[in-house]
Length: 249
Image 1: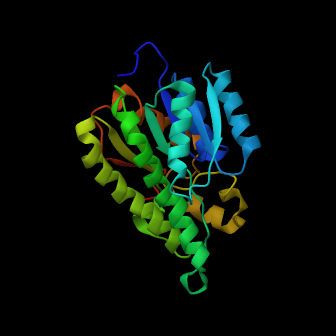
Image 2: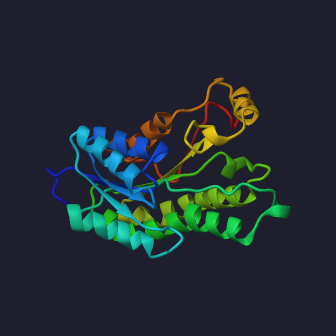
């Protein structure tokens, strides 16, 4: 078992910006060192690393393409090489290729499923042995209310994020004997670099449909994720927590 006097370590995928960066920042504030997973945005990952260091943590950024099922091994090995342990995995990385099914290309389908769902599988498979050695091993999957309710023009994204919810429940059962908790958060409409590129009328419609009458901020998601990887949530597993301002009601 890992030495209790050392800082716990979290691996956060897709952490070069947006929700992933906010999660990395919040878990660092909570006392974690952080492995920052990214694909191509090395500059963004290094900016996240600087924020982690600003909160007193250590950080290492690691690039990998989650369309490759070997990527999880690369991320986890980086954690073990740098810190010698892994205590939490946050499967946040995701992409969107929105298009109605009649116009959806093979790549639109396969890339989204590979990154959003296959990436979580790859990282979870690679991490389970190290997490089992932690006194507080935890996995949090960042899904979406689209994975719960579906959405026009997002069949690929909905299938991936819905599959992520089923993966969460299955892993919660499978990893429970190792005392690893596995949970998911389902964000609603959150202001990120990706959503800010949407047409104004779509942004306005999503806000109007949200009972709290405002969009989410990345920090809204990060605070729930940070709780789920903390000792305070040790008896929570297999849960899906909507963080959506009531949008899924």
